[in-house]
Amino acid sequence: MNALQHFRLLLIRLLTNPSYFWALAGLVILGDAILTQLIIRFIPYTEIDWETYMHQISLYIKGERNYRLLEGPTGPLVYPAGHVAIHRWLHNVTSSGEDVPRAQQVYGALYLLSLALACATYSVTGVIPNWLVMLLPLSKRLHSLYVLRLFNDCWMAVAAQAAVLAYATGADVVGTLMLSLAISTKMSALLYLPGLLVVLFRKRGLVQTALHLTAIVAIQAWLAADFLRADSEAYFHGAFDFSRVFLYKWTVNWRFLDEQTFLDPRFAKALLLCHISTLAVFGWRRWCSEDGGVLPVLGRAFKRPTQSPALGPILSDDVVTILYTSNLIGILFARSLHYQFYSWYAQQLPFLVWRTQYPALIKVFLLFGIEYSWNVFPSTTFSSLTLCIANALVVFGIYLGSAMRSDRLIRTNVEVASS
Image (tube, rainbow, N blue to C red):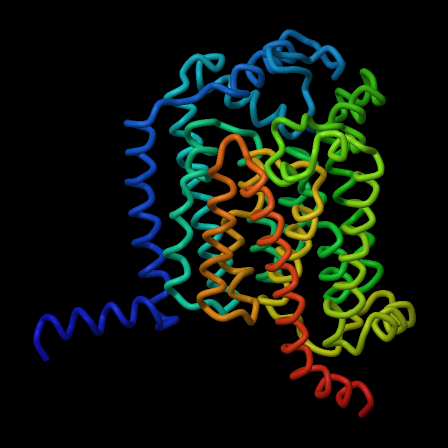
């Protein structure tokens, strides 16, 4: 066998052989590390929210604890207490925010951590081809959000990724801690909670699920203790304002609607109804189907509240698919998506698209359409419509894919339960 044949064989193994997954992933991470440094070096930084973050933290350092009074050039503080803790550290290591190049290096390391976590999550599921990780570094917008814009969303996204990986590997306590930190950084991490309830309930049963939820609330209270003592109403209104109305000019997903419709409270209620309904359909028809359905799962859980009501082990790919899908459903029906929100799910998309049963060409078009939409600024009727349709098709594809998988397993599990 000559050198060219050896190279071809090695390439095929890297792309397809699971035992070579981390060899390929390591090359991808190394290559992206080089690319990230080139981006920092040659593409100008754009100031958006960093100055505001640092100004708000300077007020916090001076002793201010009332959330209504923590303001900056672009507005008041609208993130929970974990954001304050992270950016107080960043304030210290970047000379009060003046050393932007150092901040970019911190965010560059954070980006590479997110990439490594995504690779690790793909690996533990055991259902994704090696070569799919080569798609992870291809997002222009995602690199920009981390190292050229320094958005807070990136910290939330990485903590959430760590939580998903922990849940997928059975480290549920670590997962709950990391998801709590994600929620404390930005409340958008709450989108994982519906899926998490299903995962924990099936894995751990009623009592332990309640304990995990209690821990999430307790961690939020502990991190926010100073602000809650100063003015709890101001804190909750600032950090967890579910009634916030976004500006039409910044929307990425609903630009194909007119501004009057976008701002109409009835539109917001319709989106919330669609969100809840879609979660209910997945919860009722898909997420518990392998255990005989929702009612049998609930029945077993209430009979034995300290034990798992599942008929068999919950696989890592089930955990990841449920949590990722829960997040995606929330994104699909979000009242407004801003450009930094792409970090919430950009590295989850290749996995999610591959869990559908669409032909490979359709999968590629979906990924391309979503990436295209997030790179059009300002958004247009076409880009926003493309984004909404593509996100909806991914959700629908996962629903159909879950149905096909369930049909193969449910009969066996039901037979086990009745024996």
